[in-house]
Image (cartoon, rainbow over all chains, first blue to last red; front, side, top):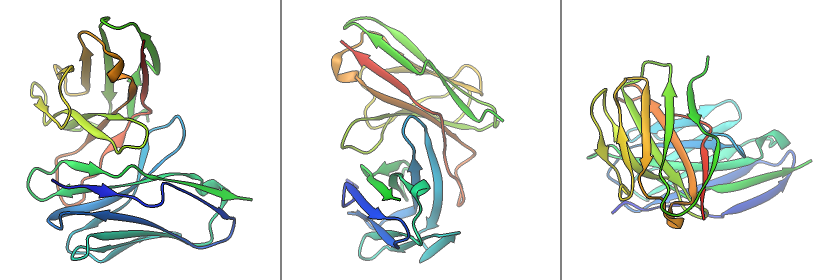
Amino acid sequence: KQEVTQIPAALSVPEGENLVLNCSFTDSAIYNLQWFRQDPGKGLTSLLLIQSSQREQTSGRLNASLDKSSGRSTLYIAASQPGDSATYLCAVRGDSNYQLIWGAGTKLIIKP
Amino acid sequence: NAGVTQTPKFRVLKTGQSMTLLCAQDMNHEYMYWYRQDPGMGLRLIHYSVGEGTTAKGEVPDGYNVSRLKKQNFLLGLESAAPSQTSVYFCASSNVAGTKETQYFGPGTRLLVL
């Protein structure tokens, strides 16, 4: 059974720092992996989607990498801003039933 | 552009009461999903639908029923609410699963069962 883990559960850094969020999964047979952002009281917004054949995806200050063999993905945020404060979740889609399996998220706080 | 909307935003129920959560999407998506989110845990899929008139069980379907009578609406029902169903419920929709498929989420419904 696929399990997705995100460590740490919470992270607080000063504004301007570059940071890395981690996501690990136990079964490497995945179709794709996605990173989402969740703001308090709001729904989730998709940030980046990486196909199993890809190594990374970039969008603005965000870069997500995928290493299937080691069961790991990272979300790199460059030059962090207070507006980046949110909970970041990763989710993997299996290559059999296509359902998303979610991590519990990392709550990120960027201090001005 | 409304996207995915959920009704109600917040509800308090007593144990044993019933209620229906409504999800509506205006993107003409085929797939719709109901998730629950509990503290310290990832989202868990309750039920999903691959098209109008079809539904399927997800990871945690017990205690819930769903209906997809219209393509744009996906209803989640609790017939006899239990405290264990206290959670935040999210609805999502997507176009037909493919290499670039992603899900679009509603703002959530916070449910408290006393």
